[in-house]
Length: 254
Image 1 (spheres, helix red, strand yellow):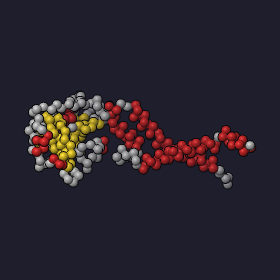
Image 2 (cartoon, one colour):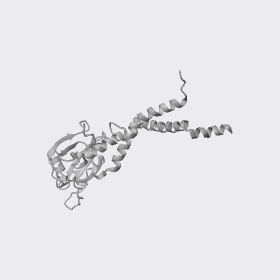
Image 3 (cartoon, rainbow, N blue to C red):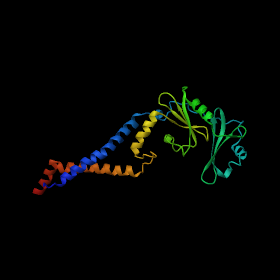
Image 4 (tube, rainbow, N blue to C red):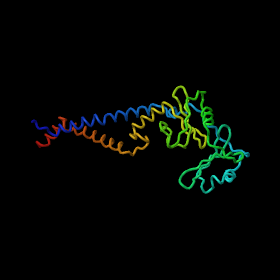
């Protein structure tokens, strides 16, 4: 049987590594091309909805302390985590987040006019908020309430306030406006373009569950194998190059 030298094994290792890693290199390059050739504002759906007008404080608004004191049974000052003014369907509210002591947050919407608490957004409210935000009138295709436990296919709305209403419109790009039930604001607008972006981003990070963890072991392993593949290519060139071989032979003769 013919004895195989080290060149054979270097060549074979590089060939199979190239096929295995080459697929992922192609996906990384494909994703990079898409990321660099797309407009992020369009990917985010900024061209579909109106920008919120700034809220101007007026003398008719009660103070935040007064609003909290009238709802002290729900949220006490030491438990306050955040407070901001939001506009919902023409009315302004203090959107308050309080810690209930167990790490969970309690959300309140308190009117800036009379300090009365507003209930979380209903489906009807979410429809109105989403429709009012769009530049163009579009028919609503579906509305769905999502929570951390019932997220399902709505993984595109991640690390955002929950629960939320997913209001999907008919027409080009099938945009979905995600309206948080806790503060009545649209926290994300997702379109077909964004979904393609997200899919390619998943292939880029190789985080097939959460999509955003770039410290996962699969990505680390492929990164190391990528370096090994490149190094094996350099090694294959070195052991196969006649020029390099002549240089070494010349040194030996000397």
